[in-house]
Amino acid sequence: MIRREQPTVGANAALIKSDGELVRRCRAGDSAAWEQVVHEYSRRVFNLAYRFTGRHESAEDLTQEVFVRVYRSLDQYDPQAGDLANWLMRLARNLVIDDYRRRCRTPTDIGDDIGDHEYHLESRHDAPDRGVERFERAKQVHAAIAKLQPDLRECVILRDIEELTYQEIVDILKIPIGTVKSRINRGRIELAKILRRMRVVETL
Amino acid sequence: MNCVKFQDSLTDYIDGALDPRARAECAAHRLICGECRELYNDVRVTVQALNAIGEYAEPEGLRDRIIASTTTGEMLSCGEFDKLLERYFDGVILAPTFQTFQSHFENCFKCRRLLNGIEEAIGMLQDAKETEVDVPGSLHDRIVAATVGRGSFSWIARAQSALVNFSQRLMSPQMAVAAMIIALISLLVISRFGSVSNLTTTAEHKVESLVIQGKQKVNSTGAMARTGLQRVSYEVNLFLFSGAPSGDSAPGPPSGQNGARPTPQPQRNSDPPPDPADSTKRDKQRRRQNQGER
Image 1 (cartoon, rainbow over the protein chains, first blue to last red):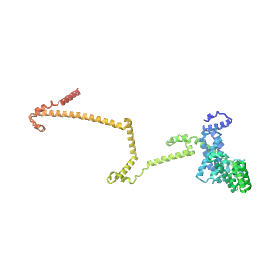
Image 2 (spheres, rainbow over the protein chains, first blue to last red; image 1 turned 120 degrees about the horizontal axis):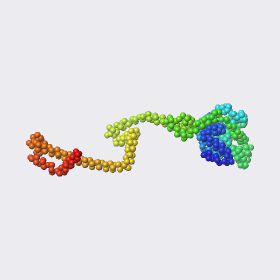
Image 3 (cartoon, chains in turn green, brown; image 1 turned 180 degrees about the vertical axis):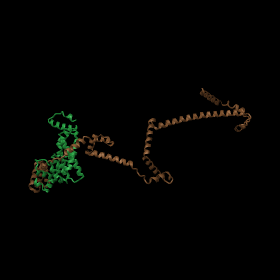
């Protein structure tokens, strides 16, 4: 199917071709192609998962689950409908939010172990350009996010971290745009208050 | 503008999405209200912090884990897993296929649940096969009442117990087999004769013709027996009355029989001719015998 689409050479033919070719080779069982996809997107997916789970192990498991689903859904990727990154991240977001909502319905100790894994994550922190101070702040912000009530949390994460548009959030969460807007507003205010209580805001 | 209204439009205010008039109102409120000014600053900083939040490096080994779980296990789709299930339970999956099968099982929650469910069901069936259901306590009494103690029971109770017995018999495997055999036979019959009524009419015809044939047979044998007897008695008479004229050797039956007749011999001699039918039959028989000899 994808092979048939390749002769259409357009303005962004190079991009279409590379994504389409990559996916086609993945589907043909080319492990190098699939490894390339995993290397390219695993960090983004892991971070997305971590933001919603707030737990290191859960995020890891969820990331694996997402890639398994991505791998299985590769035949649904249409290179002409958009680039692989958009398609893959959209799928990942949907899966992560599904998982998030499932967990919210059956409450566990979400976010309780953020502190437990702070050191864990810090020790793996491999970006030399990022200052330790900044990393500390990010950690505190994550901890604050974990304290938000679930419906506000998902909206704030999607808007201010994932930086999606309102419409994209509406499409993912399947709630009216007015609700999305008010949740983002309330979420931001709540988060600011939490950070203030944590005496983080002053240092930001 | 009050604090509630200001807070409601805070996001739009920060994002610059308000129309100029609303923005001016918010700016004015921010100047007047210290609390809202503080909140505004906090939220702005918070949003900036959120926007600037960095990405963590994914844990070591995660990529390898993903690749391992996808290239081996997920090569096998759930549909292919389903197809292999039967072979798995038969124990005939080849080693390389089994590896992907197993890997898919480990990675796919749905298929794991499916396989475990099937295994559970098989176990339950086995249990069901090995355990017998206890006979209800009242069953014995019911059987006795339905068979021996018929008189003492009201007809309702008898009907009830009969119904229960019948339904219980229906449940038994023997009954099932019998029912199947009956169904099969009736199917065969229907396919042979078109319908049951056809069968009965043909059967009636068969029976009728059989009865007619039987009657004919009986008649003919009866006639044969009669002529045979007549011949025998004729021979006996001939022997008695011609071979031994004074006749003391067998005085019993002939004398008793012919007691009313004082002179039986001449009459006996004239006896055979009066039955022409018999004679013709005898002739036929003789002819047949001759034919047989020839």
